[in-house]
Image (cartoon, rainbow over all chains, first blue to last red; front, side, top):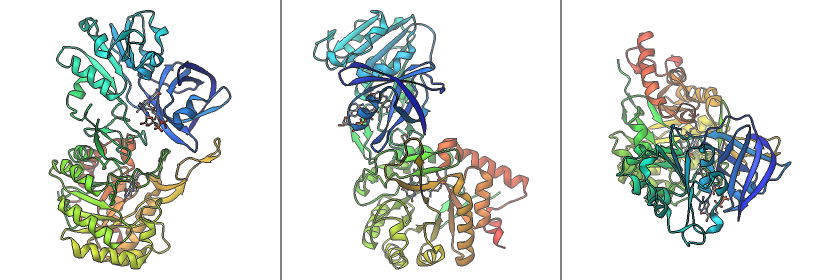
Length: 246
Length: 298
Ligand SMILES: Cc1cc2nc3c(=O)[nH]c(=O)nc-3n(C[C@H](O)[C@H](O)[C@H](O)COP(=O)(O)OP(=O)(O)OC[C@H]3O[C@@H](n4cnc5c(N)ncnc54)[C@H](O)[C@@H]3O)c2cc1C
Ligand SMILES: Cc1cc2nc3c(=O)[nH]c(=O)nc-3n(C[C@H](O)[C@H](O)[C@H](O)COP(=O)(O)O)c2cc1C
Ligand code: FES
């Protein structure tokens, strides 16, 4: 178990905080840690900033995410990792597509040739707008901020052929929507998947999709890989290992 | 050169996937079976769906893993689909089961048999869940009752997986003597404290130790039981490379299972072991695996 001294805690939005710390770990965009909330749980979290200073951005769902999101200067973050296969960075024009906090692990990919789409249920879910210098579409389910609609509403306003690579992160249903929209176009894309993870090191089978482990073979998969995975966006595993439909 | 082996079922090579490591899901088992494993033992399956313990369920270091997954499993009725998927590989699947008593074990075994598994592995040895595993396995009368019951209810071979967490494993092995083979060893009860957080790491506090650090213990048990009982043995515990596997075979194992090492080397470990076994046989003038099973006892 590693530990890192917390330097700062930034409130990003409703129930979303960024925890800032410093470690020597070399992190590549898309990789994650298993963050330990002692006596509570251990959860996978990605990096939203990966220089000497590191940041993780956490949305509060339950007890463990609440504990991590509330770590303040002087506290320690306990974790293991980094784990997982990172995004493959290709030169050229990038489109980042993030739903809610799904935009967080995409932030380290930003360069001066990047465009973004951030989607959310409502205005409160939209974070990290500031990193995009207006090269960005925002879309909310209820129209309370940006366009009114879903991620495809924003995709339809762009000429996707302009982009050399699409990078997407968010709930699997949203990723499937993006995938279905582009699967018959000649477009390069990588998707970062979220599944329940108990070990993070490829032993417990709880994160598996078509025989691949999201924690070690992923979390990033190319559109080509996903074309051979019929479980994508269709079935997932519960903590018990039982397969259920989305 | 003969590397196929017989443990009551015929295996194309001695390398099996151990219970609890990437074998809860049909697609994962299928993938591993298509990549060099001669068979897979499933995650231990019980009567009901079980969530298991909350994470952290695993702590790992360079040479060991401590796990307290807590026998999470989808339950026997949900598991038929997974076995069906795994069987598309054309390789044998061995159904691991856990229960409280002989009745539960036989019911689970009959269902597994109806799902077309090739053999049953009785988990009499999980060290960290109350009322199951080791608590069942350390009662010799209960063990012999479970083994007899299950043997009388199914026509496929029955293996008993025993616990090293007992004062007298020979007695435990004798109690399980009616099984077609013994599987040695399960994990060793252990724990990890984080000295900075000043707390046990695993949510269940106690877990089971596996990986390279337990190999000498496994070798000793395989050797000792082979000497005492001359039964077929499947060796498991800390196997990471071909030398480890050969050591188990020479101690008396007819086949070996690989678990924790999958985390270090990925599922590619099975193809590597197969290649390295061939190379070892050629370099050391071995023609038949039978010639080295238990050779250290002779
Ligand atoms: C590889 C990977 C990287 C991740 N990176 C991040 C990250 O950078 N930032 C971040 O905030 N989260 C991230 N997540 C998701 C995060 O791990 C979960 O939100 C977290 O496990 C919730 O734990 P909890 O104990 O607080 O909530 P729980 O007690 O597990 O959940 C409470 C309730 O919220 C629901 N819930 C939990 N998580 C989610 C979710 N993600 N989406 C929708 N509903 C949910 C549960 O179903 C439950 O009803 C990542 C997940 C993966 C697999
Ligand atoms: C994460 C994990 C889960 C396990 N689950 C089971 C299980 O459900 N049933 C069982 O009989 N053994 C289980 N085991 C024990 C292994 O099958 C094996 O006996 C032990 O790990 C020693 O082998 P190894 O050092 O190669 O891992 C588990 C081990 C690990 C690491
Ligand atoms: S989280 Fe355990 S195998 Fe991926």
